[in-house]
Length: 388
Image 1: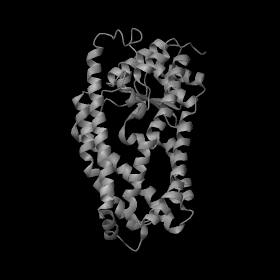
Image 2: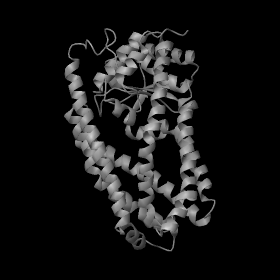
Image 3: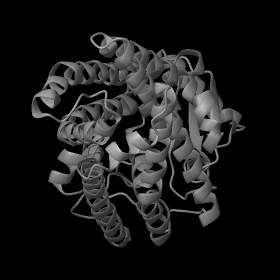
């Protein structure tokens, strides 16, 4: 749940901002600009690295250096060296964005050792998924040169579905400590809200965010029997029960509207379209250009480069779809809670606590943001009526 906008004493408009808003909005703008610059530099560096790693022949040399009689071992060795190289090269970007900037703007409570531990765990987890996925890619390519793509698409689709169910109970505990929420009154209110919305919730938990950040957050994670409400302790300490309930209503709105399934469908559709495009378009194009087959390990950086460029080109469209879902969930939260002013207050608190801009530049919102501008969300929930 990203922050949206509204003051406790009513809706925070542009004309008469609450006292003190100008200062934290100045800091929010500076924080946003610093993150945007970092994103631009890191993206450019990633694209340049992939191109040079392929064009210089370094990837081809590495493929030859790790070659063994067993394809699976060759692929694993290549990927491990590649992943380790990328992780170390881009560690300064991760450290600056995840530690330096967060401390500069007062959002982090972590020490360097704790941040590094999280970085190592995240890098190892990402490496495991990357290696397993690419092993499937190269082994299927070798065994089934014409049919590999739909076989891999089926496998990756099943993995995506499985992760939607198990992530809250398997992956989340790697980074965060969760415990059942002890506030019985709030738990009861959330459970009654979930029943009104027709959504099943297995449990309501407090998640220990304060160990890492001062920012507040909440989520509804998992699907079916693993679906649980996760409330950051940073939120529970500063938000009223009414405010917390409206934030949860927003998350429930995503489930009621089927946004989780829609997102999963988009992800699975992207897998199928991407792999089919790779087989039917990129593969013959590579061969005609004399680049070599897509099964050659030395061409992996080029494939990743094409994937990254494609992701950047498609990002505005995916973000527009996400903003639509978020706006619908906002209206749902205001209606189902019957407390649009409490929701407005919660959104404003989130904006201030997370140091978010109320009105970012329009171009930035359209290209990069998965949520509508906080001020826009503020205006949308104004005057929404209750649904019993």
